[in-house]
Image (cartoon, rainbow, N blue to C red; front, side, top):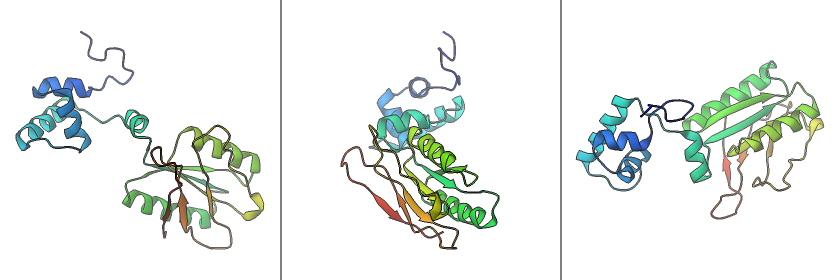
Length: 183
């Protein structure tokens, strides 16, 4: 049986880790996902098997099942501008401390680019978007047929720092969540 069985990356699956550890797939999933109870002995076996096989969790698969990507999108007018570079640094530091990855897109102060960047982040199903651009480049966030509930224009070239992160609606509650953040 080929090692990659049609997978593009060739990385081991949870099933392969479970087989190596001599446990069921559910036990391996609970151990590697960090939820539910697993005895210390089985946990040790699963973690050893995962390390031996070079297992890495598939973030895309996890986000499809949970609805959360643990990713924030940041749209800035000009990443070369020292103001925006500082804002992005603060956002990245804050989001990383809270377990989020950050995708940064620069629009070069072009409204069409800002709309395109917003659509890219919505299509990537990021958990939140921060638009850091001058107020004159205001853009409506498209919502037609999408899970997205809104984006926060959270700073401008006036020197104010981002204050909030608006996130898409929760798949279970349908409510908009907002987190306060200081960069």
